[in-house]
Image 1 (cartoon, rainbow, N blue to C red):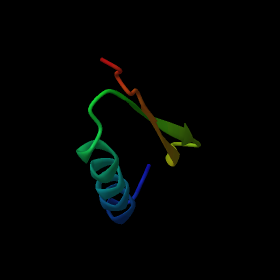
Image 2: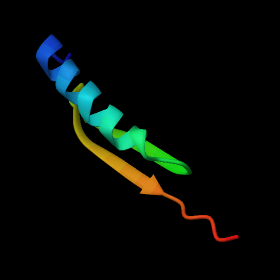
Image 3: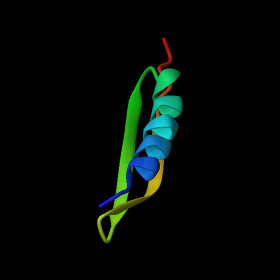
Length: 47
């Protein structure tokens, strides 16, 4: 389980990834109960 400090750090990083994302996904990779990686996949729509 993540400590409160780790949770706050991950939360802040997640907010940064999401603030400019229009289309796509964010994936949290968890190992041994801890978030070890965040992945951002962004789609670009061509009109």
